[in-house]
Structure formats: C-alpha cells, structure tokens
Length: 330
Image 1 (cartoon, rainbow, N blue to C red):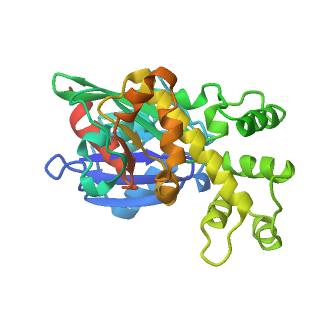
Image 2 (cartoon, rainbow, N blue to C red):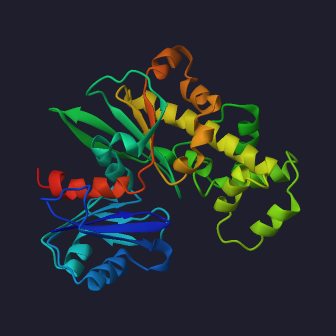
C-alpha cells in the first residue's frame, strides 16, 4: 500500500493506492489547506488516523528543490525529509520529488478529457516534453524518453530572470525591481504575481479601480481570486483586471516558449497549475500563441509544437502515485 501526495503552497492532496488499482484510482483521497498546518507530517498523521489506514511506502511531490533527501518548501515554512516522514509513518521507505516532477510523470497517463489543446501542432513521437505550471508559484519540468519510457526531470526555471518582451513589461520590470531583490518569471507569472501586476497598472494610471472592486479587495488575504473574477465577471468586469490577465497570459506564453525551446519539446508542451484551467478562454486567444511562437528564426519550429492545458486538478497526485508505484523501485 502506498500513500502519495501533491504538496502545494495552497492545498495538499493525499491518497492511498495499491499496485492493483494503479495511480489513477486511489482507494481513498482527501485535500487539506496547506497553510493551516505546521508540517507535512501533521497532515499525513491526521489523514491516516481519520481513515484508520496503514501503508508501507510513501511518495510525495512537493513544491521546492529536493536536495539529497530533504526539501525546504518554496511557499511554505516547512522543511521535509524522507527520513522524518518514514519514521513518522513507520514505512519501509519515503520518497520526495519536486512537485513539477510529479506533474510531469502524470503526462503519459493523461486522457484526452484531461486536456484542452491550444495548438495541435505536429508531435514527434518520443521527443522531449515540457511542463510549466503557474499556481501559487511557477513550476517547470520536462520529460525525456529513455527506452520507450518517459523519465521526468525537475527544474527551477520559474526562478530564472524575467525577460520583458514589450514596453509595458519593461515598465513592469522596473516597478518590480523596486519591490524585490530579484525579479524572476515567478514574480510575473503565478498566483502571487497577479496582485503585483494589478497594482502596477493601477498605480501607473493604466485604468481606474472601480469602487465595487476596491471594496472586494479591501482586507482580503489573497487578492488573486478577486482579480481573476473581476476579469471574467458576468455582471461586472474591470478593465484593470482584464489588463492584468492579458499581461499574465503574454508572459506565460513567452516563458512556455522559452522552456519548449530549451528542451526541444517536440512531443509537446503541457501547461498545468491551478490558474490555466480558469482562464482557458484567454489562452485560446491569439496573444498566447503569438508570445509562445515569438522566437525569431525558430518561430516556425515553435508553431509545430503541440500545446495542451492540463485540466485534471489531480494530475500531480497521479504523477506522485505513479512514481511511488512504478518508478521508485526501478
């Protein structure tokens, strides 16, 4: 029996799996608000006690670089080690992998209904695959095919230097440089980035903040859902919110293209994370693919790369379970 988890800055998904049922069919599964717990061990302990379950192996995809057998989480104040988890759960072995590595492992297991295709392109069988995921932060990973089986590789590319591609993005970079010591793509293309983009546009006079939105933003802990809703509201919409999401989509397209170009993702580029499924209509507009393809002499190559949005919210959990069931013991 395997316990597997997808540990994110906002929520943690946990499931119990058997080899017979496989990674797509958990025996039991629950979600927990990550920030309400002081450790991963506390979540796992509560989960196992509530389910009255025992397991013999554990595998967790967790947001942050895995150094040896330890992770200092990027967007949570946790330090997690395989040894501590194994002792707490009394299991034979606990495995920690990067959360985007876990998401990448899910890609070969996804069904057509788990995806929305943005660019059909022309996939090259057994070519590399890129994975990018804007959620609380910005994660990146890629897969290579080795002996007809895909192997996932973690990356911290989301923390690479942000490179603006338009006048307004150049101004945004100057704005963020005054606020942060280092401006990465994560600072411009993630859930944590959306309020900063909005404030840049508001403070720069690019639009007027409506009173109803100011009221909704007042005192909220996380402004991102409010701003996203403001861009898609059926009764009330906000031009500043729409402009915020336009910049977000353009930057996501550019960085997705950067990743695809760097790893030669000829078998496809997959977009995961919590935000993209909520803004499919924006990703289907020309601006996203224009930014994705805007690679000079390689624009034709970029146009041939398939681009898909992962809409299955449990994809990273599927990947973590697959790692624990099939990959860890190879």
